[in-house]
Amino acid sequence: MKIKIYPKDWTVIERRDVVVAPPDLAFLVIPYETQKPSDVFENILNAREFAKKIWAKGIAVICPQLNALFLDSTIDKDILQLGHQQMLRACDLVVISDDWYTQDWCKAAVTLARQLQLPITDTNLSSVSDIELGRNIQ
Image 1 (tube, rainbow, N blue to C red):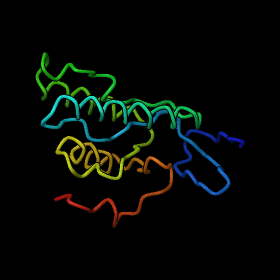
Image 2: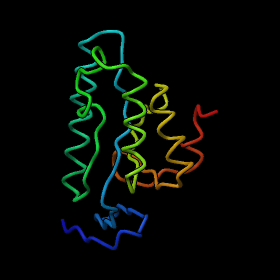
Image 3: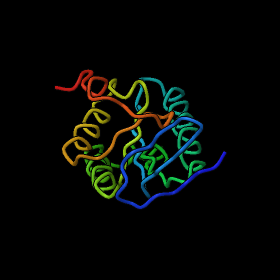
């Protein structure tokens, strides 16, 4: 598998025999919070696996789940969300999981990405249509 890196202003990632034109920095949007601490840990592990896949494609990743690992009990969630929004603003691309629309922070991140007109792709690094993005976004 060969990865071909293109200039930063390219915003398309294609996946057919893996032709990749990646931006420099991606922001990973996948659920974090649940009712059970063991499920939170599972979500963190899932985020880590997705982040590893993205890094393996030559794309740097900001992963909020790993950045704020178990800090949600010690730092105000609004502060964490504002910090993550600032990180997202620095990114060239947003990567979403299939269940991104199940949590408010994920919806807020996708809404901000759309406002910033950032390319949005799924965790398989295939393009995501506006119809798919419209799910559960007000």
